[in-house]
Image (cartoon, rainbow, N blue to C red; front, side, top):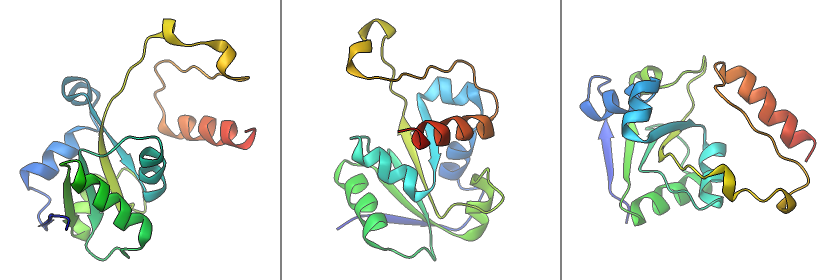
Length: 145
């Protein structure tokens, strides 16, 4: 059974810590980042990445995908936080706050370890400043397979 902590205050220290991850300095110091949206969380799980923390709305529909995210996060010792609307609004960087967010460890690889023969297409990005541009790039890549 998953242990879920209920947080209603945007000033909770755990929420403040997550919110700080939207600042590059704190991402770099902590080695963590925030992914917004259930689809992103499920894609991460499918790639073997488990959130350190999973945040979801108290009124979110706990369907099979969210339940899987809760179960896998809990099983690996991650923290599950059920939060109120005010907390989601503080955390979300989108106009319509996502119902689910995950805090993940950053993973880095060495460029020397990349074998171009392993794939027909590679995309490399450096210092992307606008999340909207990154989203467009990701959707384009996904569109061309």
